[in-house]
Image (cartoon, rainbow, N blue to C red; front, side):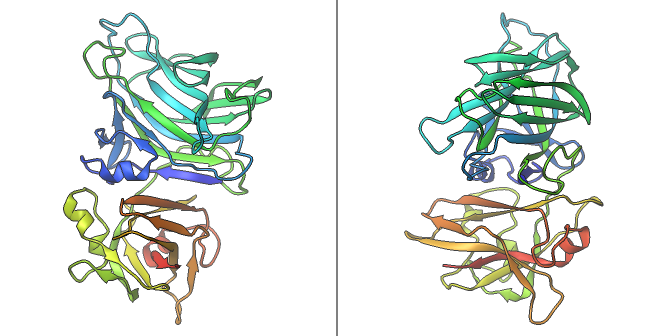
Length: 375
């Protein structure tokens, strides 16, 4: 079951506000550039660069089997002035994310080998206070690879497998992969704090792109290794001629108030709003820039806040734009908007909720998609 996808393409701009609203914890000073195919990638390498997801799994017990796929590239470095390898780039699986304390179960991380090579290490616990489980063979810097990591998080029957561009890079089984002593995880986080660590007083740049996260709870493609993925971002470009019922802060086009790719205070001031339960606001979206023959999942990201104290709820909504009256379908999650701080609320759809089956390029370009006030 897909839990999260991320393109890093043209979403946040340099201010980082959209980025910090989307994740549980994030450093908003990072850069977004140099993607694998088009648009941007997440560029780390500054001090404390990181992004940690909000809770991805709310079920009890927490899922123990996770797969994470991501494009990854790291610069070479001379290691000048550094006397030890620092554990500063990697991926951690967390449990008890909303509890106290949050705990790090297991971490996949990078270690420097030479000026031009690195290796992966799997460590039980967090990136610093942890026990080495396994190390991989070296790989070269300055090359994009698509890495996929499958982990079973369990204190006695844990297992792991890391793939590089579809080929097994290292694996193991029957090991303790749960530092907390209990199986499962509910969120993940990437850390990319390589400033002044491997290379004195300088930055070793790190890029991540085309990220997916899933568990083995599903039945379709989003249940195991997916393979190299390209994740595309599309934005609203038109209004549904019938369901454009929310009010406008200014202007006459609903879509124009919600499709920003850079941030400023003025962007927060420009928005659509509603006080009436049942009102819908739906939008047509831009065409995909590439021909995706097999769309495995989509994710809707809606940023919302209250204008004053109180709370409201909404559901993501789809209109297939093919029948009269409209054939509408709604997401399964009902999101609560509480407080005046902006927050990004995300939902993954593996299948078309209107007619069933997989999404296609035609569906995404013909449907109107948005939200309905439910409470």
